[in-house]
Amino acid sequence: FLPRVQTIAIILLTLGILLLSIFCIIRRNLLPLQKLADHMASVKDVPTPAAIISGSAELEMITGSYNKMTDTLHKYLIELNEIHEKQRQDELALLQMQINPHFLYNTLDSVKHLIEMHNPFDACQTIEALISLLRSTLQKTNMVVTVSEEVQNIRNYISIIAPRYGGLITADVFADPDCLTCKIPNLLLQPLVENSFFHAFQSTKKGQVRIFLSRLGDELTCEVIDNGDGMTEGQLARIWERPAPHQSVTSIGLANIRERLALLYPGKNSFQITSEHGYGTCVTISFPAEGCLPLN
Image: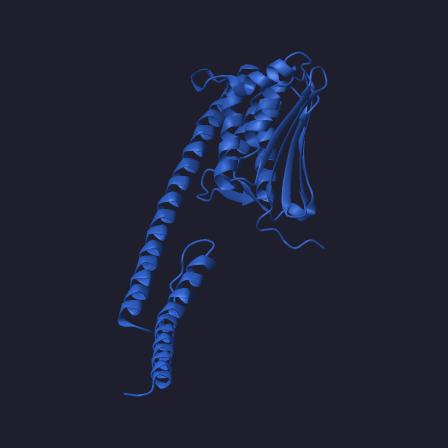
């Protein structure tokens, strides 16, 4: 037997070597796990596959299972986005269909009114404007058009609806050159112009409607302003409070616009109505300016 001191030293050395070996083995397995954990923690959105981390067979199996899970999740999210996009397009198409029949009804009613007033020239002009509007809008499969196209659409609609009022109500569209190439939902402003003609001049019987489109930075702003009767606070509140089955034409048109904006620009749009009784109403819409040429 070795002396007691040497025996203790050998035991301590053996324990030290054993502890160092255990530490190295644990570290060899924990470092790859730490890398995998750091990769998972760094992901802010959808998990991305991690590189196969060398190590034990168990560790490689865990990494492979994680990558398989992320691949499956990616495929599921792609399918989910495709379903959501199809649903969004279907909802937009339904909203577009909601506007078109009502718009056609009012247009034909205006033509009928002109014929009854023995005004065949204006009736023919109205039909020509309707044909131009149908060609430029209803035949399009896209949900958005350029501001330049929308301006022409609104002018065609004004040509359709204005003769019915014998020149007492006038309207025009003004668009900044910087925003003419920007994208805007097809026939977005038509219900607002229609509401102005049909409802804004019940008492005054005459006035002006002005539509302004402008671009401020990355935002497109549309304003429809009339100098008609205006609304009281109570009348303005009732526009939004009426239940769907009893909504007026005005409420349906406004709800349609808000829903289309929410589908096309979720969380990035605004819709405001300001009105003063006896002075008129201003409707302001803003949303991201997309497809525009760079500002000078």
